[in-house]
Length: 138
Image (cartoon, rainbow, N blue to C red; front, side):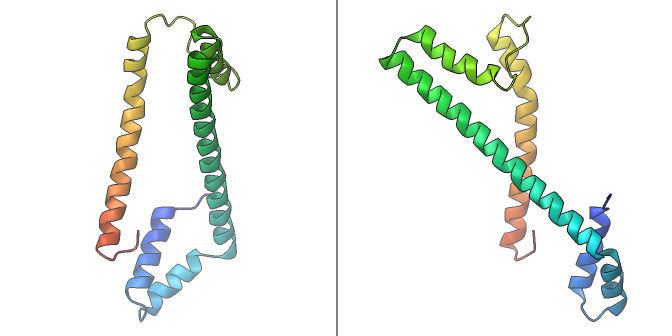
């Protein structure tokens, strides 16, 4: 199901802003049949599971890096420590491309998209905090 979320949001805001406007309430009510509600709930659950998956992957990588440091400092040394890093990337297929030979150039090139995405996330959260500070609904 394809849901026009911007339209749904505008209808909900109109209905919320003037609860005496029966036309706005009717428009909103007509836009939210049970199928739309169920689709939004399913989408929300999917997003929650994706966030959980990313959180667990992030935790896994942090754990592997910590284990690598322990291995390097108290175990079999730097080569064995790199096995922790290698195995953590190889398992999900996240090894760097074979042709890459300059680690700093690779990092500098690839971090641009990450930084751009993080700027978008930070902007979203800043706007949400500002709206909440004004007593608005996020």
